[in-house]
Image 1 (cartoon, rainbow, N blue to C red):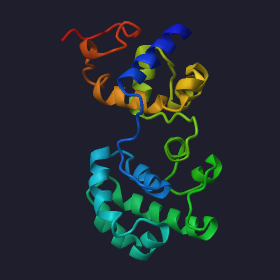
Image 2: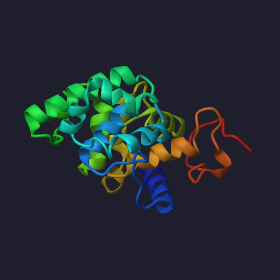
Image 3: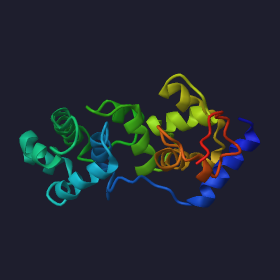
Image 4: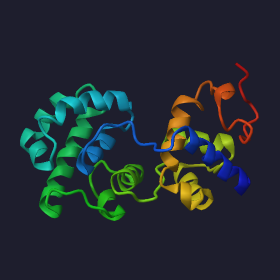
Amino acid sequence: MKRADVVELFSRLRELDPHPTTELEYRTPFELLIAVILSAQATDVGVNKATRRLYPVAATPQAILDLGEDGLKRYIATIGLYNAKAKNIIATCAILVDRYGGEVPRSREALEALPGVGRKTANVVLNTAFGEPTIAVDTHIFRVANRTGLAPGKDVRAVEDKLIKVVPAEFRQDAHHWLILHGRYVCKARKPDCPRCVIRDLCRWPHKTED
């Protein structure tokens, strides 16, 4: 995609939603971290239902440690892979308490060293909690980047690296939120809603839907 088209694409998405953010509900960097860990292979709606019950009871690393793994499971049992996620969250909370005084570290290396935290989760926390211009590539962004021709790549890391190169600096802070929301609600996996798409004319995908 030509640079002028990239600028136009993000200008239109920004006009639709000037201040995009995650649909996960959180108040602190720690609450966001836990929500993102829980969101793997789960919907934001499902995660929010669980954390609305969990966070009034335990919203700090020490409070979750005090719940214990079995206690935590009672709050997150409606979420897929909850056994593994509970184990990782307890281990992560222990590290946060022991090494970081209960605070979420602000470096990628430290975040990725936490159990249950991969590059995508680290990028979300760095961007959304700490204002870093990172771009977290999930299935929605991977699909949109490839379909539109914005940043085609064979895997999520290739797409992330290309997005960092092609997204102008003025859009980079909010780029992944715009792309996620576009992929979730318009450029959907099974049947994209091309007639309602504000970037249809810029998109390189040859199989656009008509209705």
